[in-house]
Length: 225
Image (cartoon, helix red, strand yellow):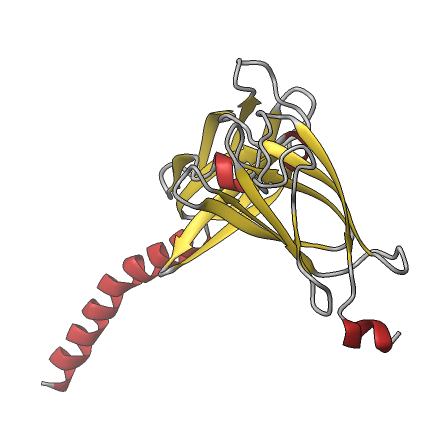
C-alpha cells in the first residue's frame, strides 16, 4: 500500500516538473521591439524618442527613454512578455505623449519575443517656449505649473510642472487658455495685448510661441525675502 502511494506521488511529481520548468522558462524570457520612426509625410524622423506604454490593473506606465538615431531606427530591449502601446515623441517639435499616444499595439510573447514596427508620427501640436521667473529677483521659479485648456475642444488640455525654462506642447489651431501658477505667487493668465477681452492664444502645428512669464510674489512671500 505504501509502495503504491509512493509510486503515485512520484508519478505526480514527474508530471508536474515539465509544467514547472516551462513556467520558469516563460517568466525568464525577455523580448524587445525594433523599428523605424517616420514623420507625418513619410520622412525618417531622427532625434525623436521611442516610447512604450503598458497597463497593469488600473495603472498605466509609460517609458520614453530610448533615443531614435538619425536614420529613424530604434531598439527597445529587456521587455517582459505582454502587450505594449508603441509611439514616438519629440516635445521640442510639438510631438508629445498627449498627441501621439496611445500608438500601435505590440504583443511580446514566448513564441514571438521580438517585434519590428514602423511608427508614423501623428499631427503635432503647437509649442510654448520660455521661462517662468520671479518678477522681483529675476530668478527661475521651480515647480511652477502651466495649465492649458482648449476651450473649443471640450476642455482638452493638461498640466505641466516647470522648473524655470520650459517646452510645453499644446493643442494646435484652436483657442487655448493658458494659466501659470506657483506656490507663493499670484497666478498669471496669458492675454493678447491686441485683444485683451479674449485671454486665449492660438498656434499652428509645430509653431513656437515665446512666453517669458514673470510671476509677482504674494505679499507674505515677498516679505519673507
